[in-house]
Image 1 (cartoon, rainbow, N blue to C red):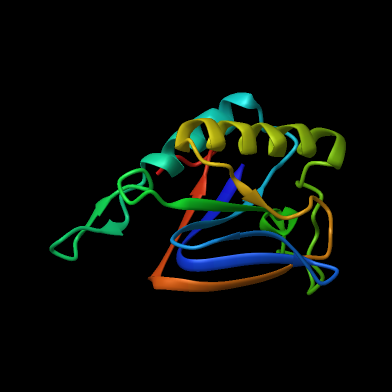
Image 2 (image 1 turned 180 degrees about the vertical axis):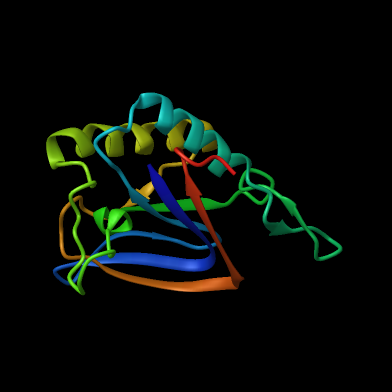
Amino acid sequence: MRAILQRVTSASCTVDGQVTGQINTGFLILLGIEDIDTIEDVQWLAQKIVGMRVFGDENGLMNKSLADIDGRILLISQFTLFAQTKKGNRPSFIRAAKPDKAIPLYEQMITTLTSLTGHDTATGIFGADMKISLVNDGPVTIIMDTKNRE
């Protein structure tokens, strides 16, 4: 499971001209799920996301977590995070989980993040053509991978 966290001052997702999710200060998270991912990946990643201390304190240092600032999350499914680009110029997405595997894990991530933060997790629509708008704060962008826990 891969996630790209972007610290934002605002972010929104629009599908067919309708806003499906929007937040102010918090994280825009792009989430990729692969076939080998499990509920344990969801739990580990959600805990790390919620505990990530990348928001400024009174001295301007990145010491505060999402909970400390009462921040929100916009979670967007993005299978292209598992693009393989080794051969040619057309990426392969064979490692990305098919919807029958990915949707339950995506929905579990929504439930887990909502439980951990105490706030509804804003979302896009799985598999839809989404338009994402954001104001990246910093910019702060962090890549996390449950198979490479650095």
